[in-house]
Length: 228
Ligand code: SAM
Image 1 (cartoon, rainbow, N blue to C red):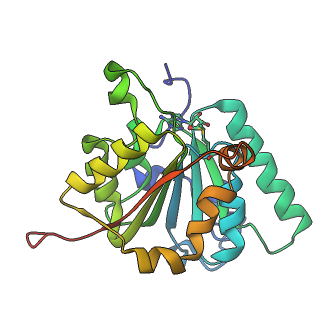
Image 2: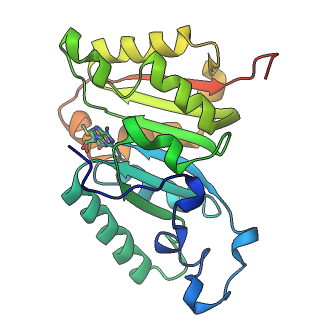
């Protein structure tokens, strides 16, 4: 059970001052910074972030975008927290845009993000759940894509990568079937600076690369339907 960790009732209830103090000064310190009304919203989510390598790579590439890792394991989440605090301490003015939260992303995504809030979502080397009866535990499914489509802005991009071919085929086919996502053309993928990080920045990606493993990526854009 994961009922022993707290989660916000709604995105309004999500206390950002604990995550991004430079942008969201704590209430009891008064309004020292830009002021919450003008503070940026979280725009990138790394779902199942593990040890946080992607976030650490993304932070300097997008210094004005707030990003968050979502991780189920307590100790791993604590590690990422410490890693970010250490980076902030040794690089003043940097890494203030990165944080992590311990949560079950399969249950609580809408508790953290509003409609159309996110411009990028990442699913790097998710757990494969091979058995047919466990496919419902996969972090990409038709049902969960409905939720991801809700929290993503039109034009936003979802990045997935795995070294498990069967899972790669599964993620791609879910995205292809979903009416609110469309494959990003190859020419765009080639020039997107984020794409190289998918296979190089995370701990899992580095392990796969060391072992010379093949990877399978699916990169899709959130599109609009006429009715929206
Ligand atoms: N993305 C990282 C990387 O590439 O190094 C970690 C990959 S690891 C194989 C999968 C991660 O997803 C694990 O750290 C696991 O704890 C986390 N995870 C699994 N299910 C999750 C869930 N429902 N919510 C949040 N994190 C989850």
